[in-house]
Image 1 (cartoon, rainbow, N blue to C red):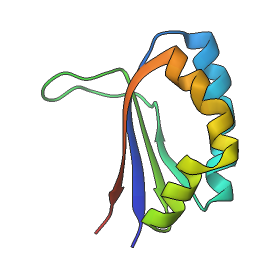
Image 2 (cartoon, one colour; image 1 turned 180 degrees about the vertical axis):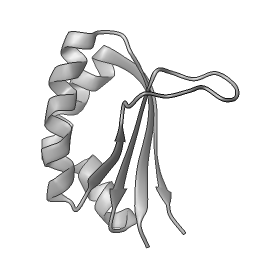
Image 3 (cartoon, helix red, strand yellow; image 1 turned 90 degrees about the vertical axis):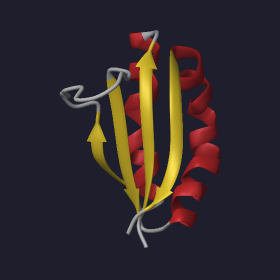
Image 4 (tube, one colour; image 1 turned 60 degrees about the vertical axis):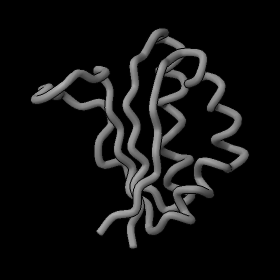
Length: 94
């Protein structure tokens, strides 16, 4: 069953965040990840939310968790944490 990394992001340092974001695709691909949404244009239909959204599909939840726990991702995660406010979850698909 596919699993998805869903992130809602408010970027606070665009330059630093761009450095982080430029490295995420290659790391996700190592774990079978495919970016379905990476901060495309959006229309807020209900409620409130940040300007940036990301959706990455993985073959299964274990692959998504391996991606997040990987050494490669751990090296760049501090950049994201310092350059943004965000919520990130891993959700199993149907």
